[in-house]
Image 1 (spheres, rainbow, N blue to C red):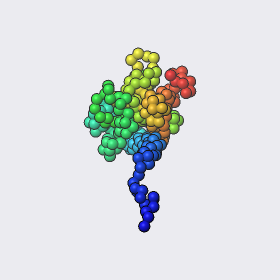
Image 2 (image 1 turned 90 degrees about the vertical axis):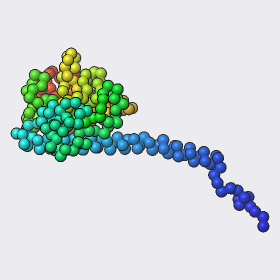
Image 3 (image 1 turned 120 degrees about the vertical axis):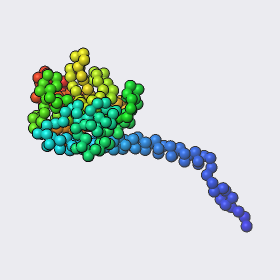
Image 4 (image 1 turned 60 degrees about the vertical axis):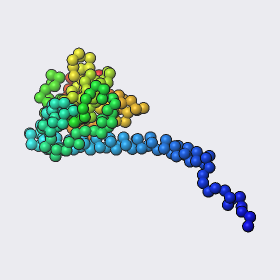
Length: 248
């Protein structure tokens, strides 16, 4: 019986077909990777926000036990941000259920290439508490209790903090767990900035946003350029002669 051309052909792929398959797979991967990267970023932002909600619950419990007062900015954690003992010795630790993972934002860790050259060690915490909630700050009496905060939905309580400086916005990096805002042009003045590594446009980690826990308990992304406005209590903003939205 005569064999047909079809029957005589190999059932395997030709080189051209294999190349086409490889090209299609490469195209699909190139289309999927950005989406997967964005999904990872959104997940990490959500984890960071969840950490801040855990810190908020602990702070409320602390305040309930301490005449409605906030923990001090340099005692909720203490010492260097790379020293886990600074977390364990902090005033908030027992209220956190000793949950050490909730002190660290995973996107801060992923941004290590921006700070590893001038910092050593692993991050023990990556969040900072508003320095204005201490006894005094920048010559002003501290806002010691939650009930004394005007417009609590607008005022920073905790946020991510950068481990690097941003020209024109900060001259200090994360160090002691306190978000200290001073006069940028004043030599020696402490000027921290909230984090800038969430949702960075074009990958510029100097131009992104921070998860900010406001005094009313809600967490939202705030652009780094808004640092001074949201950290400074409402009662003091106009004392410094700032115009709304442009405190620097």
